[in-house]
Each structure stands twice: as structure tokens, then as C-alpha cells.
Length: 362
Picture 1 (tube, rainbow, N blue to C red):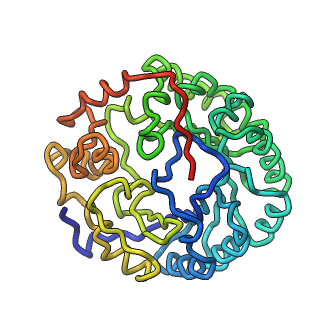
Picture 2 (cartoon, one colour; picture 1 turned 90 degrees about the horizontal axis):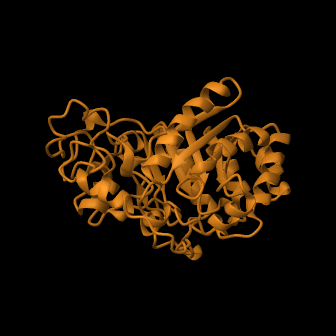
């Protein structure tokens, strides 16, 4: 797998800090890997402090404190304070289960800049069923209210699939009622736990079409009140998305155990070598890691990507999706209508079942 020269190396702008894989929820579309890092393997707060300082020196501007559920870390406030001290814009990505009002107050005092809360549905019983946790919806509403009381910006993230796609309007209404300034309508990405549950989560073409039209209508109706982010779901797109803005180009992810990944799902690609922050600096990993250099730039591309005028726009699409669907991480993302394997996407999207979810558990 060919990499690129140093002259093509960009500075990373964002860091996803996966503090833990522990989480009280069992969302069947969770982006964490199937093989979850154990508590005893997690990086300590001092190591995260070093990572944040190295990230800032590398050019990173913002850090997303994520998991699992970051509230499972007893030293979360210390970690957030370290990120703030490094000069990074600090965003907490939380399920809201595990973050008390006392902890939130301490996080705000430590310099937390923003909170993103996941919402599984606008209907409480459906939301709790999707999350696999009774009472989760009420906890989310309560934490959102506390965030707004503290004057912190709030984003609501709603992962959309067949069970809740008909309630996008209600989800946006809920985000407005909670005081959010932004809502993300994030269609499921099918790797990890979501790939395991794909046939249970996949919406119909008619649902996707109605949802796209509704999002346009909601953006017009609520312009100036809330920002609505949404993209066409992968399996129904004509062109693939430029995953993480291009592999090894603008962002990096550190796992709870210290592996540094070009994207959160990169461990799903067999054969990649991931370096660890326990052994090397972040700058060394960014510049020289075999995993980061595997799909940087365009030299690794096969046809039709190699000669495609969009190759610097979508970078061949998602490498993890290409591997999941074709077994070849260097293949054109099959989502692209020009891909040799594109027909497979329509076939897979047509497979839908109503079996129970396989919930994400440690």
C-alpha cells in the first residue's frame, strides 16, 4: 500500500480521544470495534495530558472527549482540564448516562467548551429500547437542561435508521426544546456493531427519500434557530463521502489503549500496523506510521479512482467500507456508482429483517 511524500503531509485539525470503551448503553450501531479495550488497558490521565500537548504542537485545534461513555472515567475532569490547558477547544461527546450535575459543573469550571449528547429517538420508549437501557432518555433530557443552564453550547446527535427515521421532525423539535444550537441527523455507518446489525437498521429507499425532503423543509423552517447537519446515507448515495476529510489528512483518533488510528473504524481493516502513544510521539506517528501512510494522497488508488476527477474530493471514499464490502481496502468504495462492486450495495440495502438487535456489550 503506497503512501505519500512529506511534501503532501497536512496538519491534523481534530483529535478524537476515546477515553474508554466502557458504556452503560448498548446501541446496536455503536462505532466502537467489536473487540473492546478493557478498563485495565486504558491510558492514564498523565498520558492523555501528554497527548493533548503533543496534539496542540502538531496543529490540532479541537479535541472530542469520547468513548464509550467518557463519564465512566473517574478522572474525566482532570483529563478535560488537561485538554483545556493545552489550548484545545474541548467537546464532550456523551450518552448523558454517567455524567452527574456535579461532574458537569466541575467540567465547566475546568474549561469544557461544548457538549454533544446522543439521542436515540424523540419517543422515550423507543429511545430506551434502541439504547438497551431503561431510563436513558430521561437522563439525556436532564443533562441537556443542565448544559444549557451553564451556558455551554449544546449539540444533539441522532443516529438515524429504520426504527426512528420517520421521526426526524420530532427529533429536530426535541433538539429545539432542549436548547441545542445544532442537531446532527447522522445516518448509520455500517461497520463494527452496525455492520453486525445492518439488516435490522437499514431504512427503505422510500424512507430515505422522505427523510431527505423533510430535512430540506426543516432547514428552511428553522433557519436562524438551529443548524441541521445531515448527509445522504452511504448505501443510498451516488458518490462516497470523503471519509474524515481524507485518510491521514485532517484528523486522528487515539483509542483507550493508546493505538493511534486515521479514523475510528480503521482497526477493522486487516493487515494495517497501528503505532501506540505509549511507545512513540504523536508527531512521529502522524508522519511515519504505516497505517497513516497506507492510504494518504492518491498514489495508492486503483481505477476508476486513479483517473477520476473527484479523486481529490472524496479520496476514493471510505477505506473501512471498501474493506468490509470487498475485502480490499484499496478498492473503490462500492457506494460510488462508478465502482466495480456497486451493485452489491443495492443488494445489501434490500436485505432487511426484524430480529432483535445484537446490543453492544463489553
